[in-house]
Length: 289
Image 1 (cartoon, helix red, strand yellow):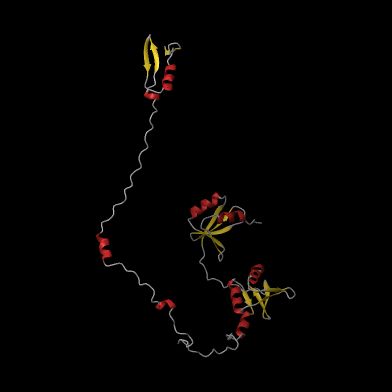
Image 2 (cartoon, one colour):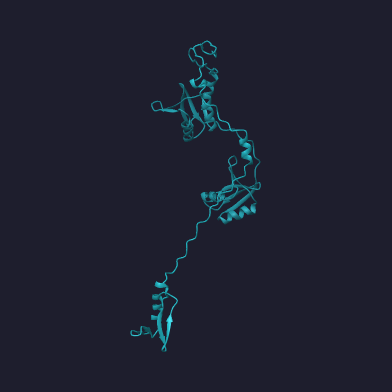
């Protein structure tokens, strides 16, 4: 008995090949990894762009082989969608007491569409979904998802066209009669009376400048700005003079010759003499040697 090998059919440049040499899932993953691949649901064949040599290298790099090379068959006319099977999945719905069926697909997919309808409600006792709203709108939503609503066409064919109802706003009161506004002055308004000071003759007339005031003001020369003299500078401090106008002096003796140290204050000159090395004060003669 011949053992059947897994294979995946692909079409390259108008030729049909088979990818073989491995497990189906592994080969399918390798085909899906090819750039630009597309699965044709009618022919159940993977369409691969490129040349046969390029695809062969990519398939062999994944560990598989490419067999065949027969010309691709001509595409035939598209077959009409298959009618739902009598025993297929269905969901029972009810619209205003009319039983309907949602068919044409898998149960879970149809259930998701029914749950997406506005104001739907599931009756647990009768196991029926109750839907509301315009039936034509509900039918369009179900058919847009790829399913059918069986029984809706009969109800829509019998239903009369909906007429627009005029809303009743109740009785409307008549507007009051128009009255022209009265813009005339009221006769009861008293006449205007000026205040008491209006005719007071004792009030002095306003004072006006004489005629020569402006001419004299224009001919008057401008006044010079005030002269703000700077404040006198502070006098420099003067040295206090010694008593009786006598200069301070200190007697010194150098090599037996007497001298006088002058030109300053006594304390300052004395401090300078004390800084001279080897100086000595002679208490008897009152002289610094």
